[in-house]
Amino acid sequence: MPISWDQFVGGCQMNYLFLILWATSVAGQSSEEIYRLLAKSHVNQNLVVSPVSIETILSMVYMGAEGSTAREMQSALRLPSGDKQEVASKYGALLNQLNQRQENGPTLKLANRIYVNDQFSLSSDFNEAVREPFRAEAESISLANGPVAAERINQWVLDQTSGKIKNMIDPGSMTTEIKAMLVNAIYFKGQWESKFDPEKTKASTFQETAEKSVPVQMMTQMGTFRANYFPDLDAQVLELPYQNSNLSMTIFLPREVGGLSSLEEKIAGFARPLEAKEVFVKLPRFKIEFRDELKEPLEKLGIRELFTDKSDLGGLFADKSGGKVSQVSHKAFLEVNEEGAEAAAATSVAVTNRAGFSMFFVADHPFAFVIRDANTVFFQGRVVSP
Image 1 (cartoon, rainbow, N blue to C red):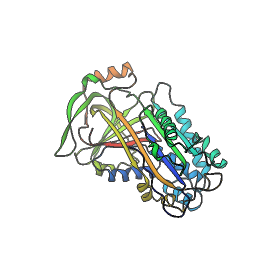
Image 2 (cartoon, one colour):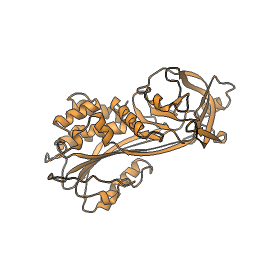
Image 3 (cartoon, one colour):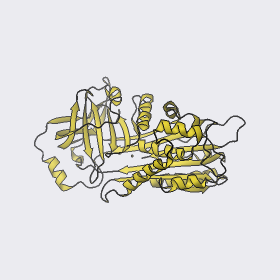
Image 4 (cartoon, rainbow, N blue to C red):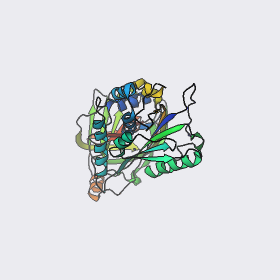
């Protein structure tokens, strides 16, 4: 869906700062709150977001914010009080960590870029503050020809997301009113440590609600996985690790078909012990594409001045002209199936040769998930209709 631009009304100069968050894939508590707000506004809809993508791009904006705008963002995002260098160091460490992942492990990359209207220049202090820690290169673009500028940005997004995010920018929306676009892209592709055998995938049903079921392709395997049932959550929790990494997908399956909404309220920051046990797993193949505007949830989170004419982003541009954020968009893509890189033979044999199991994990009704390592949630979402 093309991006539409809000019209600026009043006597102020037509200057906009536009943020776009792209993801095809531990963010702070603020990102968890954004997810809960989106979940409430998209009831009965598949959902996937990248908390780390949202937090990264907003933190970049914070690096150029000043005065009450900066204080508001710092409080809402729970960033270190008054210490922008500590914020920069946090993201520098994260990107270094991503660059050091095992060669044969999952692909996980995060990229930032700043597109600047060639009629303006970034502040040298801001440019220096984000270039290294955030790996955010600044690129000048001419907005005299909107379609050319849009194509340039769209191609970068396409490259960073391995072709998953296409035509994000509407050429007609690229006008000279735009001062800068801050872009974040995150891409993930991983293979299960214990791969599902495609020959065991069979037609089945998924109970969307107590009254409605839909046909799905259900993957099946038996093996040893970390899992548990938690009575207070009234849900089973299963961890499916990715090969050659500390990344995993954790799935939260409520016992009741209609129990997902209440479960999502309880699992923020989930860090409970799971036990290795024999599990019979049934999981539907699914693909989710999701997009939404984040202005409203961010305002509910407490970031309000940033979207008004009182916004103080004087640290962003060399002429101290600042600007306001007119729109924050987030788009995410996730596909789960049996495929990927080859699984290790030992893991495959161990799964197919299991003789017994002590737990059934049958995800035949709505469930939630996160993709994370020990410190960072890269993707979070739910499946209500595969």
